[in-house]
Length: 427
Image (cartoon, rainbow, N blue to C red; front, side):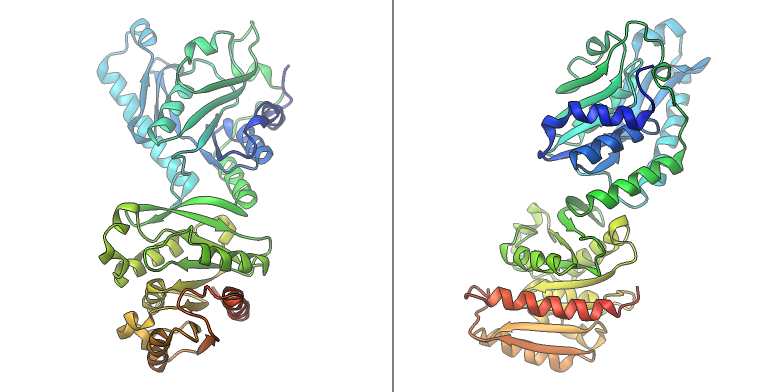
């Protein structure tokens, strides 16, 4: 017997993958049996974990014999030799595939809920299973990941037949296996404990991994029909999470908002920085001032955030800069917004003018003392607010708060506002 159980196999496999530590890696487990192995690998590498959904296509008369496999995004791999030997007709193949497609969709909903698949574009993706037999599911997994834009794929398993590299040559950039015993018959023969897993086991592994990896990770935010890049940070025992709405076409890499976010993280607050617009949308300057569009994206991103295990039950606040502040206040006027507090930095609340009286979230307006035009716009906007509000100026600061100590002051003001109001929030 080679392995005590899948978890032990995963820890041993992780040692062989140590060269990937520190890289932009995501680990994908093949459910159900691959999840315990993949979870141990993801934990050891400090990488996020998700499922790579594939389904074996079993020969109708012998379901245990794979004649191919399917994956998400329409991927299909067929074993022509098995198809010919088993005399499988096209109609029978189509029936099996339709049934397995339905099961694939069911599992995607059960395992991920509303959460989109882990972002793999441009990243190193480690595909993990508890072993390889025919190789059809592993091949489908590799092709699915490639179709989603992975920069590099690594297929890693604890055990496989001796000829496994011949079967899977060219499907992944790197093939890693701990043992290829000559007496290989089935994966389960090499585990002392090879208990079958159910859907609840898979969901539990994903939730547990999300709790570990959500502390500081790149994410893909679902906002309607688009996917937007983001960065989620949730410190242990966070009091709440602040979602940043960037302004003037900037995105999650805005140095000023990242500075503020890091200060909030040190104070025990989570943060979500994300791109309000796609690259193509950002090239059209009209989108930068489309308050309704930006507000909708902020609302969708917040709904996505509330599905994440790390943010479950936490109060949510919005930090808006420039036109992003207008989007935050526009969205905060929605009756079901459930926002604990709003902070505007050098914002344009006037662009949310018609909706200002409907805002109920406590709102802090921070303006540079030397930013006279914007200061006047904020004074007029505050006069229209009916919620708890405060207008605070940072002496000598201009619109971008580039003066020494200005951003530090903004960070302290935002920290105190969010901390005070999130502590009392009920979500």
